[in-house]
Image 1 (cartoon, helix red, strand yellow):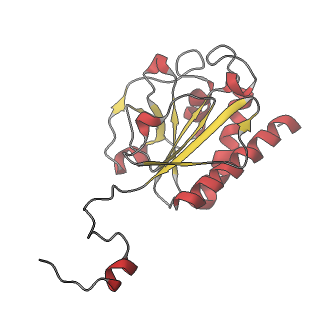
Image 2 (cartoon, helix red, strand yellow; image 1 turned 45 degrees about the vertical axis):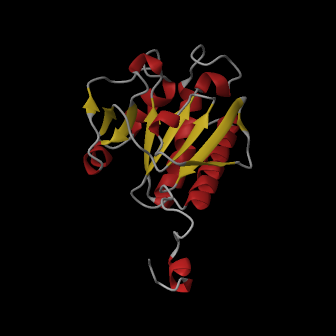
Image 3 (tube, rainbow, N blue to C red; image 1 turned 180 degrees about the vertical axis):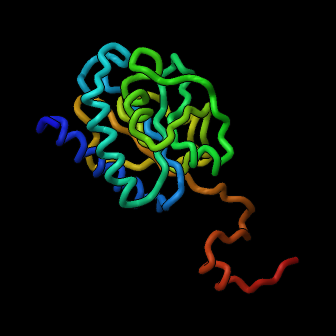
Length: 194
């Protein structure tokens, strides 16, 4: 990998680790990755995809994945309805519906096409409800996050020329004024109910 792409890989690893720390991402959870390699190059999304950029982004995600143990889900472009590339084991664990397509750079995008060839026993699924997500190049990953997303501001705001946004998810807070949300709050409560 050239020094330029080595830098991209290191930056992606940094932001993935930041997101994992902020959101408490754990082994076996899902991280959706949306990435426009065109935007990384400073071009308009969908116009100049490159497998070199995809390789660098994948390397950064994969280094963090090996340390943390999450399952990445790489989002395809709109030509494959934003389906996601995942390992079959993750699809089976989460009961994800497999769809019949193989992403290629012109239909799926360079990132998804590259990831499909790298992940162990890869398959394409229609949708996920991920625990966290990173969007490199404004690819709109929100449809693949769980219901309550919490934005995280990365220390690195751009990968190449692509804008970066990211979020983790949390369970919905339910109840009213008397509800407690942590074990510590429960211990402090008197335990009476009217």
